[in-house]
Image (cartoon, rainbow, N blue to C red; front, side, top):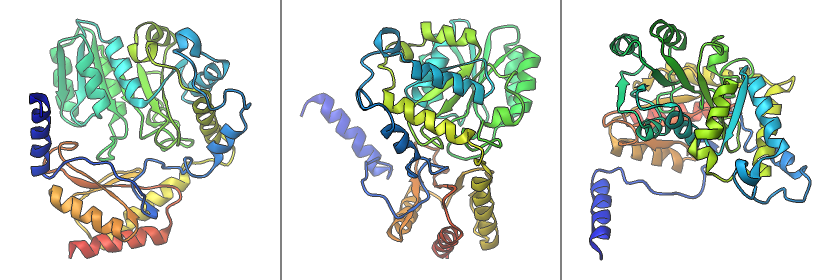
Length: 377
């Protein structure tokens, strides 16, 4: 074994000893309480039908290159126009994933003299975008803490400052006070970037996101909307001004140097947005499931729940081992629930991350809550 492989093995053994070794798994429990398919679009067949309806020639092939070389299509540009209109923005630019969008956006727009302020519970893609930015002044602010954010904004007033937050946070499921953050940014001349990954398709009457739901779309510099959650497909878009779009086309490396999304991905994303635009669609069905779940856990009286208003709910039984054991028992009973362990979340904040969907039934929710109560006893 080479010294490098010995080092890699030692790191893996350390993680195993800590009880947080990650491993891939196959097979899915019968009842889905773990996927990000909040609206059921990934499994209802609508997106598959849209792909099947594409002209056969090239439908399932690659796009042959980056969009600046050979991968641009009229369908991609039409999708961008649809996304911009839906999210009430002047322009949108497609990326291959939410991760690519965050990394590309943050690293591209941050100059050497930029100050980056980001919520301490931001998703890994935001953190990696911050790491890749060429600026040296990068600071966390305490989670959803307006006083801490204001203090840091005062320290850097007068310069180019970017504030970055999620709207619905991916692990805790809680919501950023966006209106207050917008006011602070305007007061101190900062610009706000909002990752709407877990709000897209969920927040607002048609799933426009939390920024639009709050009427803040004209006061936010940029938003990231991911297709891999409620939209049920693949890819993402950055929405903002036309100047921002043109800038990203020229300076966002994950856009410039990545093979474009293939035709079937464009078709699926287009079909997903058409669903949100259809007359019969409403986020009320999903929100009703959330209300049913929250009432069930209230009546059960099980402690340790994170207070969250949307599809992501979290229960913290305490420690990696308890989380893994609880998840294993639920999976054995047919309930798809996954444990989120440190270091993905801070030590002491390990939890079962329960994702709710518009297709979860009252009986499924009652069964899950009952089994959680049994484990508590």
